[in-house]
Length: 75
Image 1 (cartoon, one colour):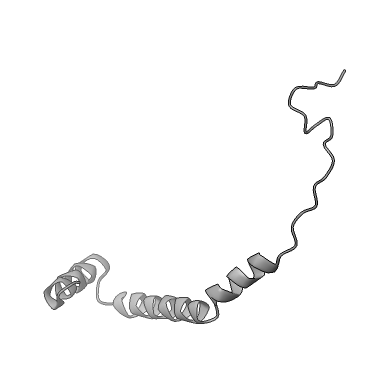
Image 2 (tube, rainbow, N blue to C red):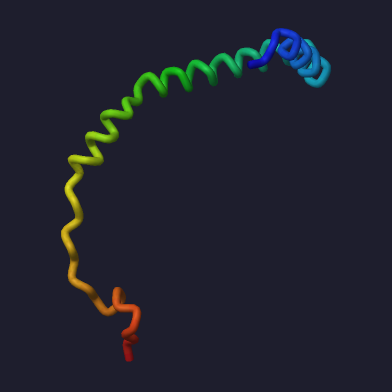
């Protein structure tokens, strides 16, 4: 886990790199991204994905064609 000193050092480096005028825009962008990820994760239910995979119809066996046979070549 990161300590508060590491976060302060990171903030100082970002401030030096991007300047004080860009900091609000960067923070706004990070906040929007975090909110979007949170909303996406809230809408995902892994149990539903497993249920769909188990209930999915299996592909019926299709007959082999000339393209499927590795040893045959067409004239």
